[in-house]
Image 1 (cartoon, rainbow, N blue to C red):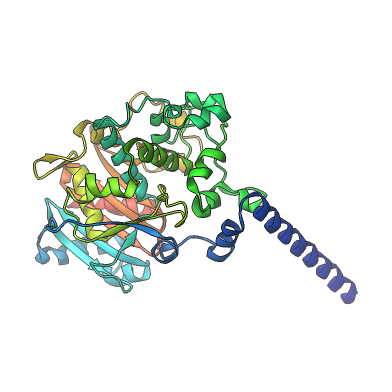
Image 2 (cartoon, one colour; image 1 turned 120 degrees about the vertical axis):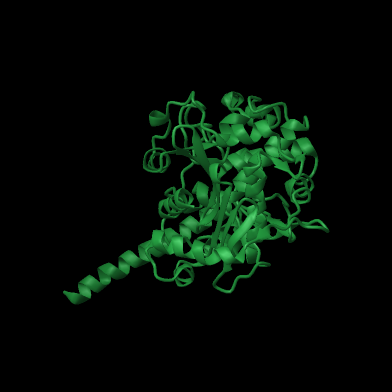
Length: 408
């Protein structure tokens, strides 16, 4: 009996091995050995995937950085309040346990708390994950202001005509639809053929231009509902690249990095050396204190020391709720319902917003593994958290930031 069972188990294992080999072979034929190799070797992406494995295009800091004022005497009060909120006797120990690398609290242009953990320091480059999408949003606003892009209601096929050649319905999708994550394009994180999974394709495929132009398929009419889709920033990056005539990282350096006085050189991870296209959905690498400056830029309505770096109207449009959207039906999936119902918030132009009272709101850029730029305009407050991993779920971090803002 035992011999029979062992033979059955052995047969099942052999079948699974054959199926796996077939999936790998089909993946290599349909896509490329490089892509399949990356997916198998690198597996689930981590902070180090972007800091060590992907090539990157440099983004140079200016000679004279902007420096926040500092109030180190406030650090103990900030720590004590977060200890109360997070129910811990020692904030530093908790941050270490949660995999935090940087935690910064800035209010009224003054650093009240700045600590680094798990081997990180002020100079450490933190990777953004999806915080990069908010940078993409900012650059779209600048490109519209400079006349490279006509406006958010332009069909994307004006700039990407090959999409219309492949499928006429792409002409109905506008830049606004991409910014709102409401294009109607299909995005399945996992598919039966592992290597056709959109999350893996948009992470590891070595030519993201091809991925965005060739693998995208229309599922529903645009504008009907929110659905998080990593092809959207790729398509926006292609539009930026084609209209401005420079790599997106260079445009970031010229229009934001240098003007707002980033303290340290940064970089933007690329799909591959051969393609040289920035990973638009992820991969802006910066010091935590420089992520705080991006938050300050939006806190101040796009203005920086008297210069309008991003149009004021664009900042408002990007971060405030759209009253025309019927919220309950617009967020049909679990992720959308968490934003709308659980956190009383919304998604707008690659920023998250959260209602504060009857008229106020907070907004946030968020990335995988718990990367946060949380901004509270009503309090002049910016909270930065970068991490090796979430440590606790996204909603718990957001509620902690909100409670801190209420009590600060």
